[in-house]
Length: 258
Image 1 (cartoon, rainbow, N blue to C red):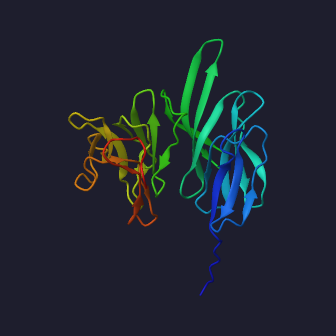
Image 2: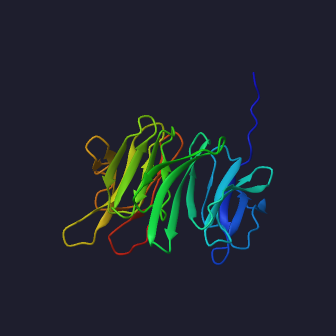
Image 3: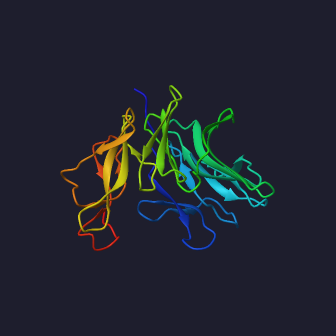
């Protein structure tokens, strides 16, 4: 039988919390701490590929814009997309690792024209396509479904999640008051979305719903167990059997516990 080599798990993160931050990684025991990038301007946002061999990140350039760079396991950083005076930000890898979704924001000072798009970049062919435009996407990262055929992105201009299907090029829109692109249930096309619920005489609390793409509405995700509890967006385990999320009780504070 074939042998399988596995690597030790590492945590990638930005450091320091204030000022210009760069990418670091650390072993789970805290011993193997390594700085991956060394940029004076500091890294803005990043995402790690599923195989752990590359990190895509957004970096300010000398034209007051933001470019996309990629760090590989050879410890080399190179420009992936040069964006000039435009801002390319919030990159996120597709699970198979060939596509990257990111927001592209440009502003023309002379005409006061603003163009905000979600683009897909093929890291092999370097071809790009625009999947969403005419909204405001640059503040929130998109989310891929686990099989990489659907992409959800929060549109700040309309207050809804726009979901794009790569298999048939259809788009649906799910209204949500909570700023989030949602979380996809592993191994399925189910999108879990937070939205506010209003209890009589109390402040609104976030609850979880699943998106019904046919009717473009939200359905309760787990109403019985999470009723009257302020709920954060979950993160699912790869097999979809477990989830971790923030819960807030009694409505006395905005803080949540995991």
